[in-house]
Length: 187
Image (cartoon, rainbow, N blue to C red; front, side):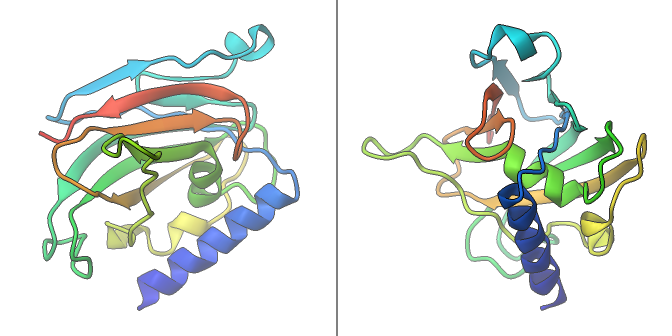
């Protein structure tokens, strides 16, 4: 129950920050035994050199997010005790590049990334965020990061099947400029 309350509080904080126009940036780098592929979405020439998401690293004006690893967690396993579906979990580091206030690991990730499984011929299948997959981040997921500081966290998404790759699409904030995307194979 504590995990759900902490997650809901973090989500509300992230949405409030986004509504107020505070941008964040992040970078990510994933290492896993599961295959990863990346492709870059077009970005404007002005920010193309500075801001991107490739090779599991997202860099934006305010933050850098580096995906360290990911894994599939089946129902009932540690990190996925309460769900009936398998989840994909990402472990990452967030660095505050700008020194702006209110940048936390969750506040940086949520407006930057969208997880999609392209397994529906009629609609975009955006995955729902799952419970925190790693209890060690219960407190740190919403802690403010100092300028130049780095804080680790994890996030998970509920899978709709266990074969279709998950695509992480990165933008500058919700609905903002595209920074790139990467596919994460589930086998």
